[in-house]
Image (cartoon, rainbow, N blue to C red):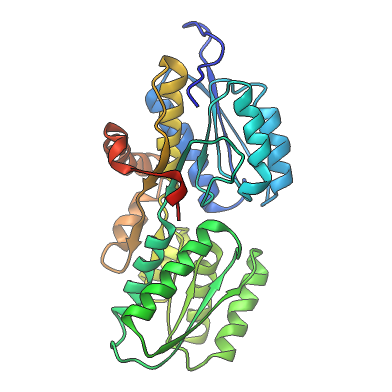
Length: 333
């Protein structure tokens, strides 16, 4: 992780790279944009950002190997499936190129990666459960349905575990169903939530673990003029509008732009000056979005400049004292 690679001159700045999960989904594009911005703030490096058009772990392997031929200063990898890219990441590290994990939920054994920048997914799940439970009486009976657009994806699985654990604490008389596979494809996901709403008209809440879930839960709630509560994880414009219109009681931002910015800044500083990279799980914050702050977040998300204005002081605070945010890598959840 600490190898600096080939010596550079002022006329030949090092190149750092970022391998995104995909180039189509809002969360992944935010992370890529943040990486470029963080590297630009640090200065002194070139950046290259790439990724498959859709979730494709095997394509990521191919693109990582290609990126490693140019991004000798270091690479951030947001893995679709951490176990698929583990061996290729180890091979890149073996070439003396620093590699860090950015999101993905965990670092797979054998990857050799010693730094991951990621949320506490379990904690984010408890945040969403609390926002839901706050709207229900503590002795409420009935059921809550949980869906996930990417089951078996570590980050989303941890969100579900956090939701289930906190709902059991706050609403012990409720039956919690799921997680049910709602599908990653936008059309499939919408149809699944429509079926789940029709099959559970007496549900107190429908909760999603992913970004597509948030967009479509808001749409289904509006379509059916539903009485049940809805909440999920996204700050896509449609999800934020869903909160503003009252169709989502809450949505959680995993702050992907900020995670990308921290990764880009750290790799740039290391590549240009040899500044040591921290080791461990760097716990990135999440953000609860509700009616009380949704207008502020809509304004924040309006442009790259407004996102940068909001993220820059956070990035500076996070990187000023990295030890404060580090936990052992094997504790990631």
